[in-house]
Image 1 (cartoon, rainbow, N blue to C red):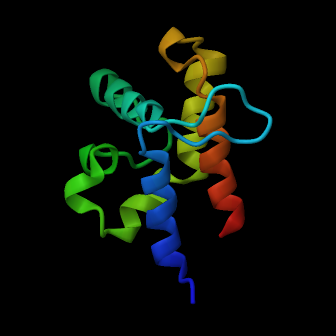
Image 2 (cartoon, helix red, strand yellow; image 1 turned 135 degrees about the vertical axis):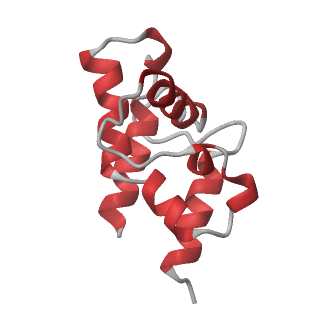
Length: 111
């Protein structure tokens, strides 16, 4: 029997795999590197972009059993933050983050 808590952690772990997750309709796979780049941008500039990302979220390996961290990473606010940096601010390091944004957004819709 599948439980929601375990599935959230598995979805986060899948995104963190080196090859990422290739979603239908996207050339570039969803990758964890965009989550860490989002955290680093927010940490460096002081902007929050409406999400709760902390170091524990971006570098979750020591906290991989915490469901709240997985739920907050795979959220609409993280997807919106990625979109804002790519579309509005046009930052080159977020080019190709469309699939990661979609992955985060789809995880929200499935809950």
